[in-house]
Length: 140
Image (cartoon, rainbow, N blue to C red; front, side, top):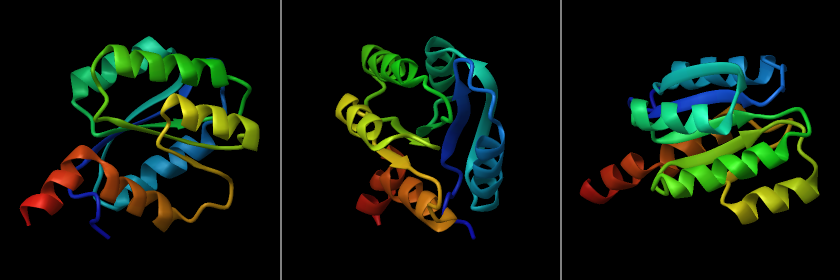
C-alpha cells in the first residue's frame, strides 16, 4: 500500500490528553501506506504543533483526541489560519461527541474520524485531500 507517496503528516495529541494508542496506531498505518509521519506525541500545545507544521512543511495535521480538549483544537485552527497554513488540512480522530464534531468542522477541521473508522478511509482521505495530492492529480 503506497497511497501516501511521501505526503507528510504530523500526528499528535493536544493538551493533557495522554491517550497514545490511537495516535500510535494511525502513525503506523500511515507509514505503512507510504506517508512520512512526524509523531509529536502527547502534551503538545497548539503553538508547538503549528511550529512543527511550518518547520516540517507538512501536508496535514492529525490530532488524536480522547479528552475534552476541544477548545485547544479550535485554538489550533485559529493558529493554522493566522500562520497562512490554510493549505494544510487538519483531521481529528477519537471519541468526539457529535456536537463537538459540528463545532470543529465549523472551525475548519477537514474531517473527524470516529471510533470504528476504517484504516483505508483515513489513508484514502489524506491521500486525496492534501495540497500536494491535489496538485499531483491536476498535473497527471
